[in-house]
Amino acid sequence: MTRLVVCGAVLGLLMAAAPVSALAGPAGNDCLAASPPGCYTPQQFRTAYDIQPLLDRGIDGRGKTVTVIVYAAGPVTSPPQVTDIRQDLATFDGLFHLSPAHISVVTTLADASSPWTASLEEVIDTEIVHAVAPGARLRVVLMPSTPQDTPANAVAGMLAALPLAIRDTDVVSFSGAVGEHFFSPAQVADMERILREAAARHVTVVAASGDSGAASDVYRWGVTPVKEVSLPASDPFVLSVGGTALTVGSQSGSYVGETAWNQVVRGGSFASGGGFSGIFARPAYQVGVPGTEATRGVPDVSGDASTGLALVRDAGGGTYELLSAGGTSAATPLWGGLMADADQLAGHDLGSVNPALYRIARDPRYGRAFHDVTTGNNTVVINGITYTGYQAGPGWDPVTGLGSPDAAVLVPILVGRS
Image (cartoon, rainbow, N blue to C red):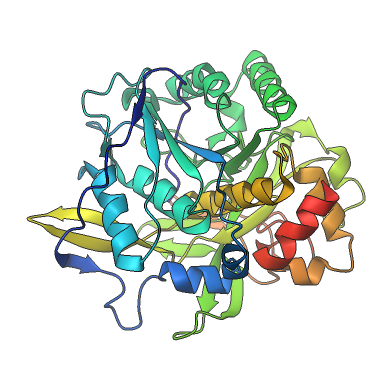
């Protein structure tokens, strides 16, 4: 599920020391041991989205930095278990035969006494980016755990930190979402200015569309959601990412199919965030796109938010657990890693990629570059209230956007179109 993550600064940089040794073996949760498996290995994930041919060519994000932005682990972190991100990544790499991760952590805003202590959100973001772009440097920006306690604090924290997050990076992967109505007109203008600056710096900002379907994400705020889309995903300068449920071949990992992510849970449901902005007019790149309306449509693209990549976390006692990544928090770093791969292939940073992606949607190669997700919807039930959403269909739709990537086809076309 999406957890709000708010950006940090470029000060107080800490570099990882030599990788810590891998943990001894699995204990407790093991999503790969379930029948059927409850997660995918990085190799299956790379095969399904056709990422492996890029990696085989040496297109792995090397020379690029992906900044992931998360709350520091704290008393409101859910679940409360925290781990050492260096240990988790080293075990992840050893278990799945990946190259060592290069990671740095920025603690200035969080003032973290233990900079390597990680929540589950940090594990999701870093391990998925690393699986997709193993040559890219990982940069983690920590925010204090407390600003997520109210929507006003969350919005203020986001706006204070965003200008810092777009510096000294090539890509920002932002797995957070706050409903548009929580922002004042002045705050919307501030965000627009910041994201224009990111585009001017040729930084690609990727953000989750949210996990509450056609409604606001409400976290622990005790407020009633409304039917709307969320910021920063709805800003036209952001590549917004929705969620799908991916099915792959059990042995080969070959792509079988996808539907819109919509998951029933006790007391309600989660689904791919999507709909139409109440703030931003339809951007030029969406003009003429079937299914769009007079305002900005969300999301732009999508990725697996259901079964998910296998994540490694320290379980204590020299053992680890394997957990499934889920929600648009998992789909977003997939695209963050792909943008680093694309930047490397281009030989320069692509920055705002939305115009190029929508040009591809009009290209005869669209059906090869994207998996067009045409089934499912994002209607959700929250606190007993049904929020009627939208239906996935051919081409762009306000549930899964243009679809999920066939990376080996999409990335070269994107580079050529940018």
